[in-house]
Image 1 (cartoon, one colour):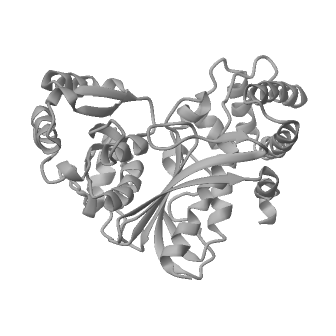
Image 2 (cartoon, rainbow, N blue to C red):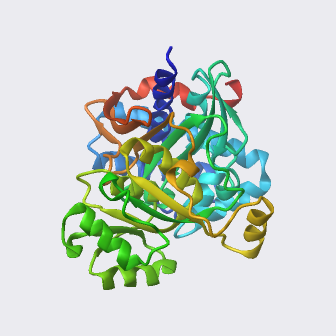
Amino acid sequence: MKTQNKFLVAGTALVAFVLLTGFRGGGWGGHGRDPERVKQFVTARLDDRLESLHATDAQKKEIQGLKDGLFTDGQRLFTDNQDARQEALAQWDAEKPDATRVHALVDARVDAMRAFMDTVSMDGTVVIGEGEKDEAPMLFNGEQVGDGSGAAVDVAVDPIDGTRLTAMGYNNALSVFAVAERGTMFDPSAVFYMDKLVVGPEAADFVDMRLPVKQNVNLVAKALDKPVSQVTVCVLDRPRHEGLVKEIRQAGARVKFILDGDVAGAIAAARPGTGVDMMMGIGGTPEGIVTACAIKATGGIIQGRLAPTDDAEKQKALDAGLDLDAVLTTNELVTSDHCYFAATGITDGDLLRGVRFADGRVHTQSIVMRSSSGTVRTVDAEHDVKKWSKWLGDRDAR
């Protein structure tokens, strides 16, 4: 099998994961102390959700079966780790559970992606994973993935880009996956955040994040041949961006806020027809490197500057020999011209549609990009839930 085809097949791991995360989370009421009552409560909430989706009887039966498998996994986790059990029960009792911690405790969010990657003919090493930043149990930096027989590659994953979006059913949650030749992805040395600037191919040769915000906005307007008042800048809705937003508005441009998930926002800035012309602000370093793989296929650019969150992280970066003032370009974030990016929509968004249930099938939409040819494919797929259930079996048996 050609290397490019192997990597495209790897993108199907996303779909497996998305089928496990296409449900909206909810409060657990007062049922957290008794596992059976929790199960009854979850079943009732899931029934309500399936009714709102107009699921058929067959779909309800299959989804409830998947739920039972996940609940069994959760109970095993509780038995194995008393501390994890107490924290999970506390989260379930909370009026507003912390989605990040729940996902970290119940590792089904990455298990399907991990299982599928092990079926792909590649010798992969996770260099951008869940691991330390999200305290995840799998897909950590340095983990080996693939069956070991194919090309030696770096692997970057973000099983949920937009954890809160997924938990609350908001727009723009994605599951993303990228690969590049071994040793070609930037090593952030545990600097989890970076300042970013992303534009499409038309403005790629104009902007520089070292310039004032107003100047960059004006340059994008000039490159796109439209008034500044029609330029839309995507920004993560965070208190740290208050000054940035003020500068963008003073420049005369419009601001589009996103709650989470800056991979989707960055790619939208580099793709035509999305209504987004540029993305600015501080977001995750892993997401920036994943985005760089996609940007290489679109012809746009991403520029980044590491933004340590505290002195310890800053010192760790300096000890690794990183220049915290340097502006990292697309080709410095990913040096290879042979990289691949795939994303599947979890919830609806500017880039992709989310998971849908209809006519006894599960419908997903994905985008797959190859940098060497600049090829971008959009894949609309249908899946039979029954044939995915094996990926929810006993993890120890795999």
